[in-house]
Every structure is written in C-alpha cells, then in structure tokens.
Amino acid sequence: MILSDKRILEEIDNGNIVIEPFKRECLGSNSYDVHLGKHMATYRNRALDARLHNEIDAFEIPKEGFVLQPNTLYLAVTVEYTETHKHIPFLEGKSSTGRLGIDIHATAGKGDVGFCNTWTLEISCMQPVRIYPGMPIGQLIYFVVDGDVETSYSQKINAKYVNPSTRPVESMMWKNTF
Image 1 (cartoon, rainbow, N blue to C red):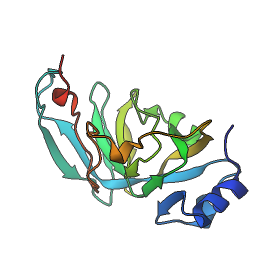
Image 2: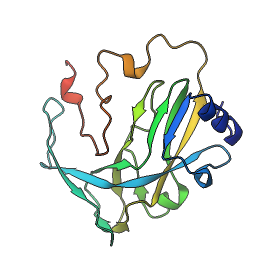
Image 3: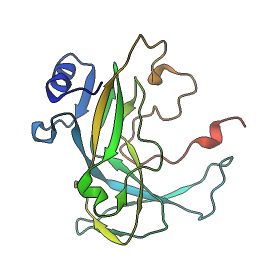
Image 4: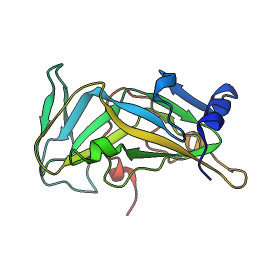
C-alpha cells in the first residue's frame, strides 16, 4: 500500500518521515518531489572494478546548467535529506524527467526502513540534455511495511551508506566479501 498525501503529512507530524527542506507545494497526491542538488561526480576510470574502490571526480553544476552526455554514468544528489523510520521509500523519476530521456537510477530506487540521508542518483541519458541545480528530478513514494523491522538500515553493522552527505557517494561494493 502506498501512502497518500494526507498519510505522508501525518507520518511527518509523527516523526516517522523527515524531509528537509519540506515544501508543501512539492507534495503530490501520493508522492513527494525531490530536486537535483548542485553536486555531481563521474568515475575517474571508464572501466570499473566491483572489487576495487573506484574513485570519482566531483564537480558543481553551474547556474547556467550542465549538459549530460550519453554513455556516461553521473552520480548526483538530491537537495532533500530524508529519514524514513516506519516505511519503505522508493525514488522514481518524474515523467517530465523521463520525457527528456533522463534516468535517475540504474537499480537503486528502493530505500530501507531507517535510511537517513540524501539520495545519491545514478543518472544516465539517451541524448545530450542540459540539467540545472534545483530542478525537480524525482519523486519519493512510501510503502507500508507489514510487520516489525528487526534492525533498521541505520543500525545495521554492514550498512555502507549511513554517513550523511550533501555530495554523491560512489559505489561501496568493494566493502563486500565475494
């Protein structure tokens, strides 16, 4: 079950959902619009290795925008910091973003109960497109969890993305044992 706008507001009032900054006009009937932060990054090497710490080169999107290029993975970040203590947050692209040929995540659209951070976006595009800091980039929807959660994400010993950041975070796959 997806939370409605009224339920999202109730859960914010109850402290179960945190969205900072929160703007009422960004609340849809069953979602909340999030915006592109000014910080982005690309991987330093074109060939990535899942067992290695792949380094990134960070930059800021200028006010006049930045043109995304096809065949490049961009890491970006949302303006909004969120906390979700009793629900499962999903981040999806807005239809207007998709109609520009922009994908905002490769596979990581689902958060966990206890996720408390900004969202790192894994952006790719179909053709060159100019983007701007602060533009609407996606929407959060919240699903009800059936049953109690034994250990929330922020309490897991092996959680890799718990340090709050206003910058995109590169893959931490290298911390896994395989």
